[in-house]
Length: 130
Image (cartoon, rainbow, N blue to C red; front, side, top):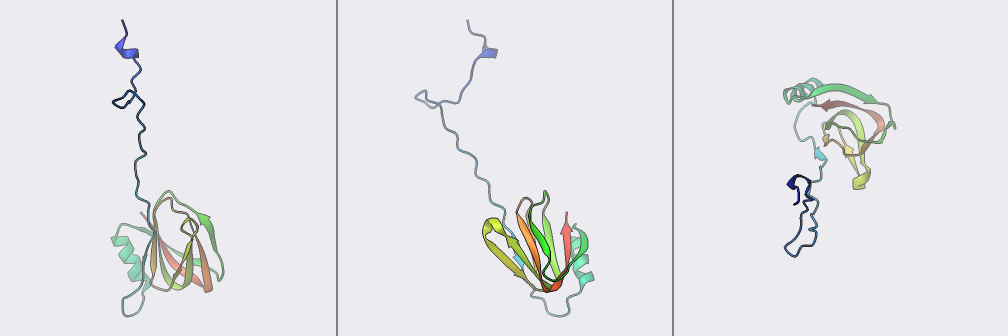
């Protein structure tokens, strides 16, 4: 008599053959860019306050001209909001680059490989995480 506790249980189809289970589909995280369309002066403190209201921790970051960071990823989502200068966000797995102007922002989901390169005037931006 077989012991039910030690019985080998397998997922099989109606004809007794092993059933092939498909891997679940996961949505691919997307980088989101928001272009600055507001009128008036771009105020760093106002941007910082908006981010804080949204639950973000915010630091001011600056890069000298033509400097940046090689492709990398984080275990947390990251938001970059450009205050002055210009910044190129490099997305190697998507084979594209995003050119940001003052006021533009980019939201990079956790795990997405990205790099940055400041333009000829450098770049000052708010770096935010939550």
